[in-house]
Amino acid sequence: MPKVLIGDKLSPAAVEIFHARGIETVTKTGLDTEQLIAEIPEYDGLVVRSACKPNADVIAAAKNLKVIGR
Image 1 (cartoon, rainbow, N blue to C red):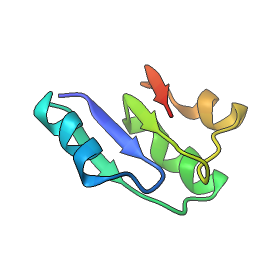
Image 2 (cartoon, one colour; image 1 turned 180 degrees about the vertical axis):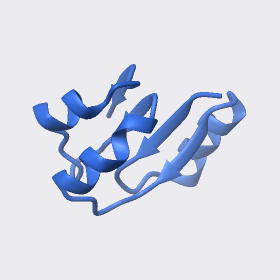
Image 3 (cartoon, rainbow, N blue to C red; image 1 turned 45 degrees about the horizontal axis):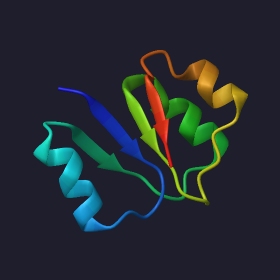
C-alpha cells in the first residue's frame, strides 16, 4: 500500500480521497528540514501546502518518493 506524508494541514475530505484509493496517510505538520529528512525515506508521496518546504536535501533523502503534491 502506498504511503503518503502530509506535511501541512489538509482537510479531512482531502485525506479521505487518499484513503478511498487505498493510500495510507500520515500527517506530521510543523516538521523542520532535519525532521523532514529523517521522516521522508519511508514515504512514496509528500503533500505540502505553504508551510512545508522540501528542499534539495529533503528530495535527496527521499529514496522511495514518487510524487510531491501541492
